Length: 232
Image 1: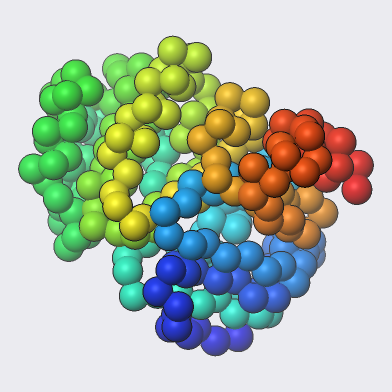
Image 2: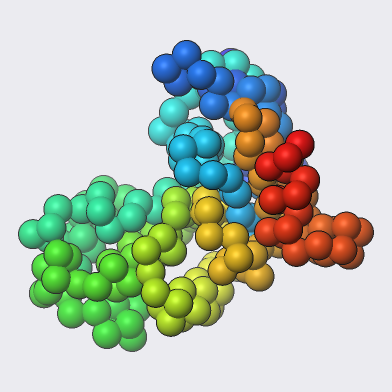
């Protein structure tokens, strides 16, 4: 296993023949995938199937047991959900945390987006709605100067209005020449966002263009997943 630099400037990250075992189970079994710039990619699979493990490998928080991960030089922003902060913290505390921890964090941009989103910076996180907690985390992650943003279930537990609003917010604030990889099991709500999907099942992955699924297979992404992947 070794880490290498990218040679093609349009490819931000590659996984080549990667295996990861946890508790005796091969969560990922010799999988290959890649992330190119200007893409939004959904990582699709059941709860507990390994979506978070895949994102943590991409972020460098976990190391593969076999295979290699090839990254470019641009920073990768791994966005945690609101539940990863202390309840007593407020938005100002979270901004200070990011400012202290990440040298590429744009504090002024974050404060502007918080104001636009009507998030009270002094209100404790435990008193914010789930939607506003996740919006806060999205703001923090997007205000890093990264080209690859990794989101782990950012829309889980959020009501339909906030989902629609956050999808719009994400598209409006996505940096040029960057990409987003988003793990989710809410495929019906989010498939319109995705340029590509990475299906994950039984330790294997299938990476496909969403347009190909619709035009070649004449199915929605959700239909394809349920009929072709879950029953593969």
